[in-house]
Length: 172
Image 1: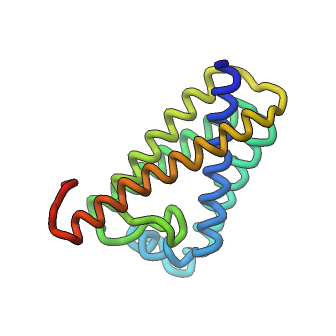
Image 2: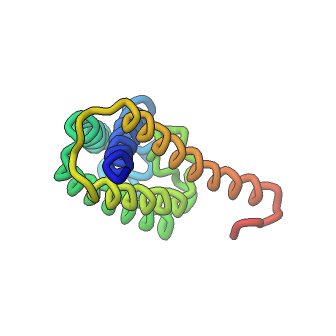
Image 3: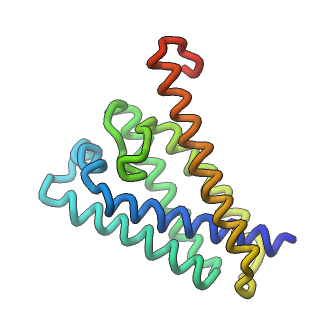
């Protein structure tokens, strides 16, 4: 059972990274204000974003295809860097969207940090057991976990935004 769960978590990470990388390519302009805020010159926005999105897609695809646990190391580093970026934005520019999910993200930075902590948990579970032969059930479990992480974290952020707009302040 651990093999199936571990491989499912690796697939979930891979799917999530490929998806976020594609969303960055689809709507690159969503990330430009955040890149400018951290001091990246405007002329470098496309190359930097392209490198980040390519790394996400590449690492995600390699993880899904090979199930190699060593790929989890650069993924964990990438998630830690992304989390630092989000904490910086939350402190210095809370109203600027990070563009993490193209223009589909809600822009609540601490939700992104929470999402990355959940993804780092998947890294730990994914590293718990070795690679297995391709299994459709692991593939489906991975897709379901990736979808659940996205929906839950973005759903929390949407609830926060709605409660703030309505002035109820349910979530501080």
